[in-house]
Length: 387
Image 1: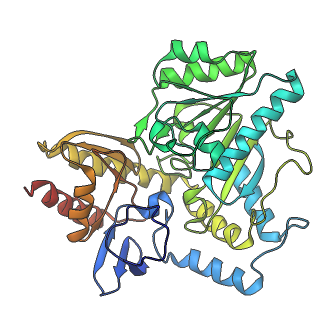
Image 2 (image 1 turned 45 degrees about the horizontal axis):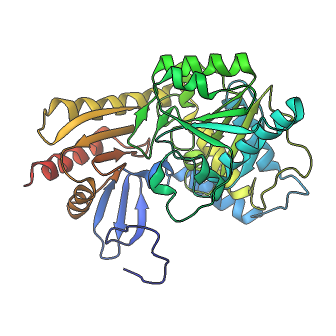
């Protein structure tokens, strides 16, 4: 393994040189079936022809325009993205999920400041949440393991337990709280879907108290769960939504979308991003939106996810404790240490993820075939069967 990078990642011993569909190829030429999609990024798989064509053609036109100006492709992408997210009116384009969540927090604080004055600036998030690795989005992340060594943190964040409606009610104090930032499905802490009653209560409290309801859909959005936005499955209309990861199919992008209440909070000079709205990301994003935001395509995501969950459950395997998730966002609790399973699966040609010490996480590309799903599950079962 190369030793020129800072040691920020627990890397597996493989270096890839090529990808095609749901497959990656390493330096010696061994092929691996990819159940990770780059942690939900390569949603259309590797080398998706329409995506390659769009990026190539855009690169031949121009790669970047500063935000003093607009580009035709970025305007088209923004318009299509706003239309895809029901109830949203405007979008800010950035580079990453952390940047998107930072923008959402700024919107909530300015909305509250302008309407109610100082002191109403707290953001409530959930224990087990993950919102990014900047100092402020770490401050918003409700997992102590990410906080070690990096304090002091941005003031004004409060964590409440999921599924505890009474605790949420107490936390959402309209005299001090500007926003609630919530993941419909917590990804990094184990693929944990929120309960309908909890989301209903959250939406009701926020509406009654004029607190911005903000959904972090960085991992679970853009069709990953079988609806374009994961919050759609709950019948909820948020005030703010953040997206990233799969939004441009592998090109860095982030987006903050705001509905009627928050669409005009930002004014000139309030926020910015040098590469936000980058034409390459926008060209790729248009392909993703055109492909994914289609009822038949989304239905296929649901069916493929059901196929995986049904198979895993039907094994009645002693190493599997629980299977859960939605669409192609699936978590599997196991009796053994997850990282050792990642290593064993890699050796047999399957790429999987962890989400905590004893949870496997599957985020395959939407374009994976039924035959490839069967092949990957066969490898996984062999790994679980091994002593």
